[in-house]
Image 1: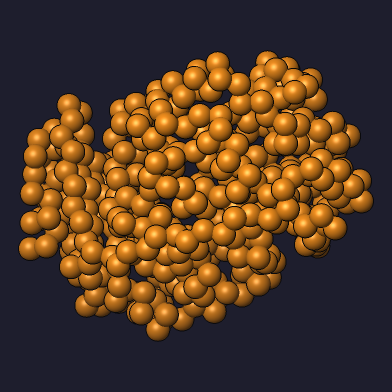
Image 2: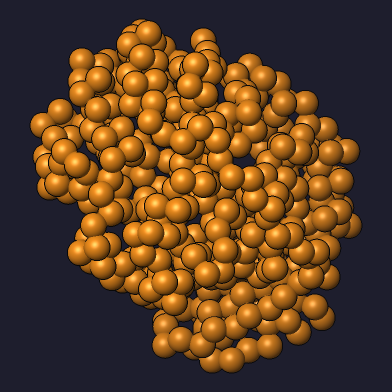
Length: 416
């Protein structure tokens, strides 16, 4: 059973004790990410996440790594558009010392100039790696286009220029605004003592600032946009996307099921038409992603340079078939079984439970238990899918990104 508890100091703790496992996963979620930044400090949330591993008042970066290894633990972190998470997994008997390491990083990182300069260069290398990975570059670029002018369109990693302008004082000022007790959710799943965990969390966060600074997040109306990047690569990478619905919208289940039908499996429409029947792509899929402030339906394909136009036409064929014929009861039933199976499989991992519960409480203020999720999936009707299809099948609303070896008129391909 999942329990949500607000500690006396304002920190929220989400706990799911599981007596049948011997391990535990704990994550510290902070409700801050790219959407909380400005163009001038873009990437600062991600930069802070990196710097949390670079030394505290009690431990060097090497000692952090060695102390975690000595406990047999696994530690990491990630930054998203709307939240940052620092997490650790360990055996039950090592939970409290592992928490000491994680909270030491979280509350007492030093942000020394030498380490900041070194890590700034590391992040710039990460930028180069993304640029040299064209499928990732295509995915990042389509997101920027779909949410152009809005906070969600800001890149998580920032820019070279914005990173150069971030120093220790700017990091401290940003953390004073965002790393506050009311902005933190600690999620824990596995085998643990709830009373001991809550006592340690309250102790470790006692000196943190109480409340976050409220910010207005820029929004802009959606307008389709297109971008072609020319690179010396062996394969073209195509991404087409349209704005959909937010994370708190009950229609998200319908959009996820429609994505499964269109491009979520080997029997999906895009896979069968574009890969199996026409042999145009090795990788082709679709996914619907939702944030608090909106969402998008994305179609991706990696194709030979001379097959880009054929791939776009094949995608449009399937969208036209969706518009004109909808989906079948059989497709909906199959998609529901796939979605329920994927959800249940994920629930068999303590880490996945921690991630799911932490994200839901941090962003939505509540948890969704297993029975509720399964009921929501089963409750999606053909009419729900029809309404979602009206958005997804409208090619006039799509933005597009193409990374290829030469300039091509992607807008014309999609619009004609």
